[in-house]
Length: 83
Image 1 (cartoon, helix red, strand yellow):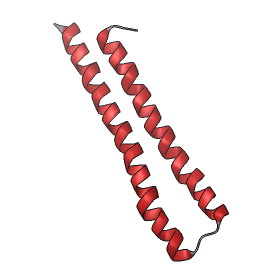
Image 2 (cartoon, rainbow, N blue to C red; image 1 turned 135 degrees about the horizontal axis):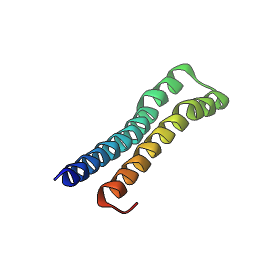
Image 3 (cartoon, rainbow, N blue to C red; image 1 turned 180 degrees about the vertical axis):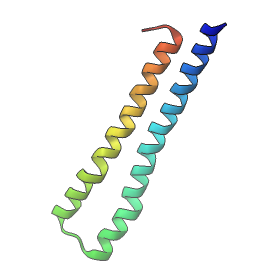
């Protein structure tokens, strides 16, 4: 009985981590397309400013999203007994 409860908790946590990872990536891409691009037009930003913003905003968002997806995959493996 406790084994099945652990399996359900692991799979549920995997679903939550996967959703949060996908939402992080999706929200980051949306903000980079709309909010940051609007600021570029308004301030006439140079190409070096755009690249710096892309690295300092986009890179942590992508890393966080990928970490969430990797954690979800690992939790699914644990929940299904594959690890």
